[in-house]
Image (cartoon, rainbow, N blue to C red; front, side):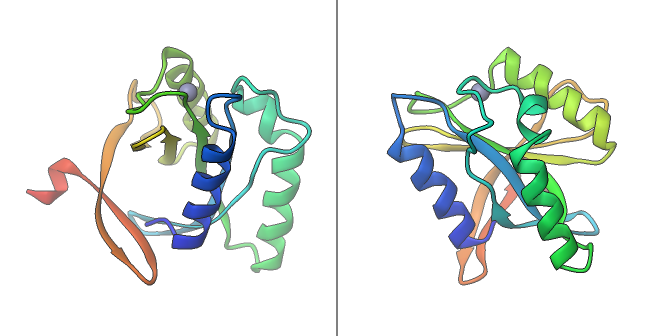
Length: 156
Ligand SMILES: [Zn+2]
């Protein structure tokens, strides 16, 4: 589940800079059992490099935002994943993305959400620690609470 307003914030940011530079940030929210609920995103800070190297990124500006939010919410707001933009209609994770995500899940040891905003489509995946590739998730429902994504196999 991705909250409607954080989703729009990240997507609009990506769209605004589309074709000029890749954008990215981290996804924050809650883990409730197997469900991950994204309720905030961070946008690029001046520490970011246009090319995506997550470890560079979250060591400075984003980590500070995450930490602040984590404290504000009584330490229940968690780092759930990352988003970035691609200059493509139908984005697919690059080999760099996959390597980067493997590194992130290895460090966190829990499933993480990864989102890529393309020009006309959004790619969403969930990656388990130790796996090579994320499982792709698809939008199944939109409500006031946000956008619900589910993996294809779960739909039956
Ligand atoms: Zn990428």
